Image (tube, rainbow, N blue to C red):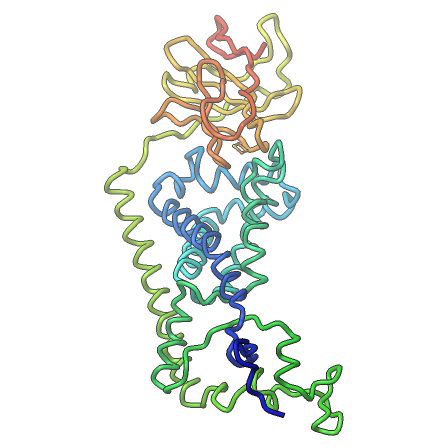
Amino acid sequence: MSDTPPPGRRAPKSLRERAPLRAGALSEWALVPLRLFLGATFTYAGLQKFANPNFFNGVSPISIHAQLVAAARVSPLHAIVVHLVGLATPIGATIAIAELAIGAATLIGILQRAAAIGGAALSFLLFLTVSFHATPYYTGADLVFFFAWLPLALAGRSSRLSLSALIEARSAAEARRPAPEIVAIPFDEVRARCGHYDAGHCRALDGAACASTHCPVLAGPSASAGDGEVDRRAVLATASTVLVGGAVAVGAVVTAVAGRVVGGAGAPIAPNTLHAPPGAARTALGVELGPARDVPVGTAANFTIPVTGDPGIVVQASKGVFDAYDAVCPHAGCTVGYYAQNHLLVCPCHGSQFLVATGEVVAGPAPHGLAKLTVVEGPDGNLYLK
Ligand code: FES
């Protein structure tokens, strides 16, 4: 019987002529925007920490020290965090370097799965320490970042806009091998091409388990890289990783120096701490907090609210005018501090900002303002909490 189709009828397309579906490639593109966003965001977050002099300034309300102090109070890991407060600077530097390394690797596409797992782990750690009490829960970005990293951790390496894929393609070209490309082929088609397939076994091999080496679709004679090519690829991959690591380190140093040159050393924003005399009783003016001279004009002081045990903060905005608040941020429970540079109360955890005069929220995820307290100066020169 002849294979020639009857006159006027087109021959059916053979399986070999049909281009395989490129669903794999399409799905790889689908993750690229997420990958670029996470890479850029983590790179920016790392650089921002190095550029901000106040991040490592232990007395700043937006420092890593202030964040750890707050986390030691509200985090479900507080029993651990409380012992880490003294290591605030190395911990802050480690977080910034990790963010920078994860971001850069993700952005340029090397060690992608490792970077995604690192990003998910870091985000989950920040969720447990910093944004565990975020209200509503979806306003805590760390949880969202954690779930955003998961698809990249599960999908692993993407060959789109990726340095490691570029290295592989270059290596394959030098070895005169076609550049590796992933395509999805319907399994029926694979079975049709490998006509001996029978429920996981090969009829042509007397029912032995199917092995890709015998299938012209699953593997061809040129599908495996030679040892020389693997070596070359490994050397290129290692060299590019070292180069990127060096670039990250240089970027961190340059950013830190630039941040200090452009932004200065940061305003002196250390709040004092008021200590009520032991056993201070409530008077007609209220509970004594300590001497008013410990809160000079334009500065703030912390104290403990006797009834609740919460941290409180009092600012002498102008001579004789004391604005006081429960310093617990209504977003996730971190402790706000006074940021003299901008005359604002600032939360170190997610950057909510509050007006000193009213406690009203002006920026950030805090759902409402700070709880106002009344502090007055008594005739004896002490401050009293009503
Ligand atoms: Fe999130 Fe304050 S705890 S902004």
